[in-house]
Image (tube, rainbow, N blue to C red; front, side, top):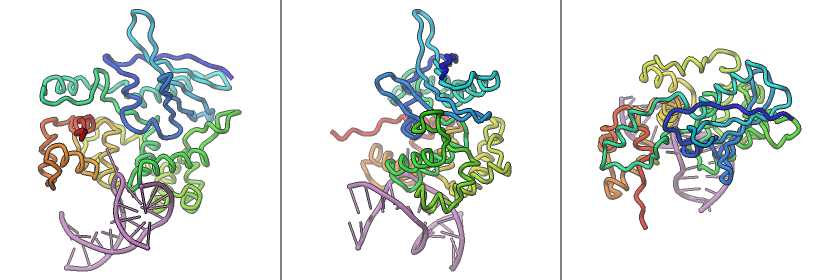
Length: 303
DNA sequence: GTCCAGGTCGCGC
DNA sequence: GCGCGACATGGA
């Protein structure tokens, strides 16, 4: 087993821990967050088929700006293409290329708003690929968080490729693996319930090249068009589409889901029933940053 | 048993 | 375009 050290340069400011823990993804396999060492681990299957384990943490040398340290555990030495792929995956996961400076300025200006955003925070962890983010998202609909974790864990355990010599560590399953498993397996073994058909369709479409998810990452795509395309995916309704827009760095679209309704009603309307228009008005001043404003809006603490 | 979870689909008006 | 029941599963 080889360990290869890579570094990536984050934007300034950048808070590694805040980014890794900004939402629940870090608790979903094959992500693993270690509180003691502040390390984010994820087994990753490269396009070549090689399965590696990535350990990400903040690196710092005296006096220098912090960097992202990537510890790659691998059986075979990395080819140049594999190294590029790993760097790209890490930059996507941590959103190292996203410019949040305008959001930070708004946070600073809006004195009345004390969002839970530290300098360098506000980046919500993503998977290495959009496919994985969509699968995660489908596993968050109409289910408790404990159930989400269970579904994703079973998917990874049963269909992910093992890290060499340590089968308890597995990569997230490929579209081909999920497609090959088929809806009956997903239903009976993964216990995906009514999501089984959606998941099987999605995986097959991606595996067979009928669905080009990379095209959805095109920044020049207008958000309404992107939303329309996401909604065409079976199982992706208003909540899931808004979550995926967030994943894709589009924060101007708020989804009015049960969590938001509860939060806004409780914090701004004394728990009274609140219209959708009233709820939208709360975050409207944030314009294209509404989702982040909502996400980091501290809940009322009812002592 | 019953209810419902950070919903979504497909139908009927 | 909007309302409504059905949909799997598992935990409270």
